[in-house]
Length: 445
Image (cartoon, rainbow, N blue to C red; front, top):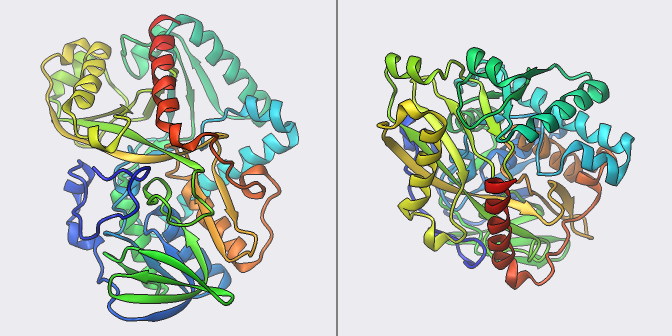
């Protein structure tokens, strides 16, 4: 499997990952014609996922700026077609209490408001006619040990106090009786906001909105190199060169090694693994007592997350391999299935129909960054840490604002560059060490 930490070229003309989501749409709908000649554009966006398409849409509709989008493969070939479809009012890994300690209450509140605006902005786009199989609202956060239930209760009270958030505290019995009889859970909190959707159909919706405003998307058109020229750039692709005044790097976890200095050694691509079971019978669902189709995540350091899909399958996800070379090892899917069965013992005979992995992008400081180079002509958004379905919509909007020279909120996500990883050659060693720590912590603490 392609590994962006070690590979400088992303091959084109690749099919979509063999995911459940890919089975729900004709793949041809996500493919456009490749670039076949030299062109010029005001803004070139590299990456036709959520971030890139949101940026192009907001440039066209709010700033009336011409943009062109290219992708090494099809629209949404990367994480936009491989994620779990969780719409949450958060992004990155830093908690709001950590933000308050590091940045102060005012900045923390501003970041929270920006995250909420991302969900609302996505909802507004979906309301324009995107059929992406939205499910019932609600986000359940499960305590994987009794002491974590106490932490969740404190978190719920803080959220109510600070943000007036609609959040319920559920005992183990309440959780099991009303939502999900997860045998590994010792209580939960439930946020009223948050829901599941079909991520590949959301991507198709973005693509359709771009066609309505005449934005060109070129599939199978990888950026082979980026060359500075005067006050702009020339981007070389297999069949044509693109002259652009400004460039947006929107390839997130799939950005090839060395694509541009503004991103070099500043992100860690991490694999997330997902499985989807066969459809469950009504009897199986009754026995396992998974009553809800709301999105669910636990409190482990190495988190598991899951949801019941509209056709009665269960999607279950967690961390995957460390390297692309090991990404397709069946061990990682089998481990997820074992955890699912331990959560719902009555499903001991359930089988898996789909298993796949995808790259997410992690920044050293564990927050998303929407920033630019010193010359103000190369922009990027990355570092969602696997929580980007809604915030990519907002990040695309803020990228468009920055490209247009408009003001953006004065928060670290938009005003600080990606930090360098110390000893970048050892990023995977650090990741391995963290995974060992996480496994030990989750098992014993």
